[in-house]
Length: 325
Image 1 (tube, rainbow, N blue to C red):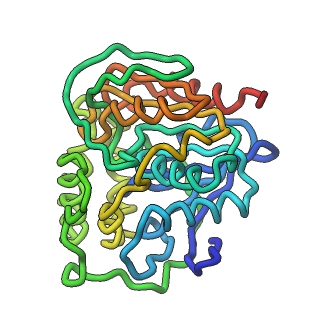
Image 2 (spheres, rainbow, N blue to C red; image 1 turned 90 degrees about the vertical axis):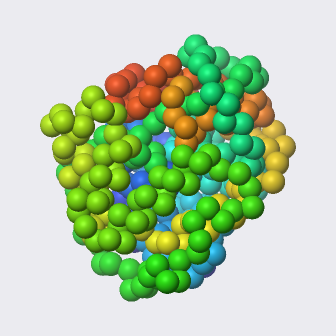
């Protein structure tokens, strides 16, 4: 556990040795185990952590903003000396918020299935061919895909036991209303979070399993890998739950505009995927269009960490392991 300057205690796991140091930021309702597969081939020291309200990290009184998440991320990155960052969904948005404040904070950045950053809600459906390249991409719109709130395949092993947070998490009576944001989020994202909160609140393992299973590709639900993932996620949710303050994050976007990101000095890899209603591919395309040194890759089918895991790992590690010019 580390403690930020604002007094928030954050659970973290460090693996690997040497340089460079890469910090991994999970998605909404994700966890350390969910981001570990993304870093399995990344060189150097890898720092995984839980944002506030997740795992055994503390849950200070809300409401929370993406500025708060960026503060969590900055504390972990500064403490570890990270020069590279990987963000999934909400974690990608937190990285963008940090970069808007400090454009030269990282040398290399990966944004995997980024959540909407500036409140733009282009959710038009459609298909497109996968693409990869540098410079401004086309601005076609379409949906993309991932796992359950950015949580990928499970990883064997454990990351140790930490003392649970002494801060209590409010009951449903003090929970802010779902979806009460002043900017537009994909309806599927609102529905998924509401379903997961309801399952956790019920305390029933079956309800949690049903909520998690709904985010898994049908082809893996009855497979050994699917059962292992489902068991790990349900056990984690039963043990740690989720802070209801997480829903207050969506009252305002991570950034009012993408313009500050044009000053970012890092090389950025933006990864999208066709078929996910929660993470429209237009979000990935717009982000890749504003970073000066951006590469965009779009996969052509959903649930990449289930269907194309090895290629995704190689793409991320190849980008991060490349020498900095």
